[in-house]
Amino acid sequence: MKAIVVDENSPDRALRWREVPDPELGPEEVLVDVRATAVNRADLLQRAGNYPPPPGAPPYLGLEMAGVVAAVGKRAGDWSPGDRVCALLGGGGYAEQIAVPHSLLLRLPEAWSFSYAAAIPEVFLTAYVNLFMEGGLQKGETVLIHGGGSGVGTAAVQLAAHAGCRVLVTAGTDAKIARCLELGAKFGVNYRESDFADAILEQTDGVDVILDIAGGAYLTPNLRLLKTKGRLVLIALLTGPRAEIDLSAVLMKRLRLIGSLLRSRPIPEKAEIVRAFKKQFWSHLEEGHIQPVIDTVLPIEQAAEAHRILEQNRNIGKVVLTVKQ
Image (cartoon, rainbow, N blue to C red; front, side, top):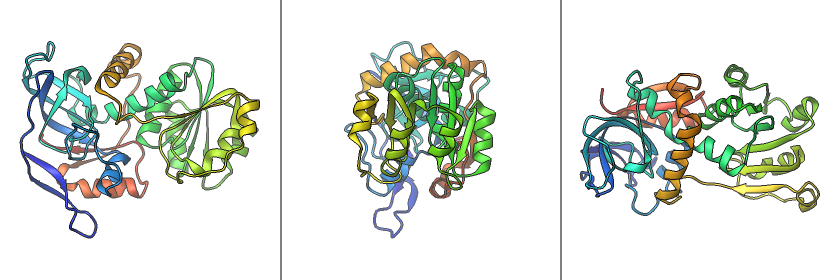
C-alpha cells in the first residue's frame, strides 16, 4: 500500500506518498480501505519530530479516517467487509489501509460522504471527553472555548450549545468569531484585538469550564475568569508550556486544573469514550443537528499544502484529505 512518509533527510521534513508495508490484521482488529482522512495539529508536531505515535500505532501521520471494511479479525465483533466506517486512530490515517481495533469503529449513515465522516472522530471525541468527562460540563453552565474556529473548537461549540450550555469563544479573526456564533456561541472575542478576559467579564460574572489550547500565556487570565469550583482543561500548549501560577486563586475559588491528552490513552479507555459519545451525541450527528465544519478538501498527495493551511491558521474547521474516491 501507499502512505505519507516524512522525509527526515529533507530540510523541511517533506511529505512523500510512497509504498510502505501493508498493515497486519490482529484478531480484534478490522482492516479498512481508507477513503479519507483529516489533518490535526498533532500531525504537524509528529512531522516535526516532537510527538511520536504511541506504542503499537502505525508510524505514519493521521489520527482519524473514514473508509470501507476490507477484512475482519477472528474476534472483531459483528463487522463485515463492505461496512462503511470512521474511527479515531493512534496514527496511520494518511495511508491506503489501516488496521483498527473494532471497539473504536463508528458505522456511517448511507448519506454521509467519506470526506464528511473523516472530519468527525478526532475533533468531536476530543471535544467530548474534555468538556464532559474531564471538565464535568453541565447543562446551564458557561463554558469558554479557546480557538473556537479550529476543528476541535467548532466541534466543542456545537456539543456544548446542544447540551444547553452558554458558550463563549476566542478566535483570531472576526470571520472565525462569526462562524462560532452561527454554530451556537453566544459571545466571541477576537484575541488579536481585545483582552479576552476583560471582554468576557464585561459580559459575564465568569465561566464554569475553560477548554484551553494555549497553555502558558493564558494561565493567569484563565484563572481570573473561572468561577468558584471552575475547571480549566488544558489540551495543548500553543503559547508555551511554562507560566507562573497564583495558587491563592486556586485555593480560594477551589479550582481544578486538568491536563488531558487523547492519543496516548489505552485502547479500552478510548473505546469507553467512543461508547459514551455515541450514546449522548451520535444520533444528533446522524440527524444533522450537529455537523463537522469542513474548510478545505484536498487529495492526499497535497498533504503538505494541508499542513500549511493549519500552520498559517487559515482554516475554519477541518482540512480533509481524500485517499480514494
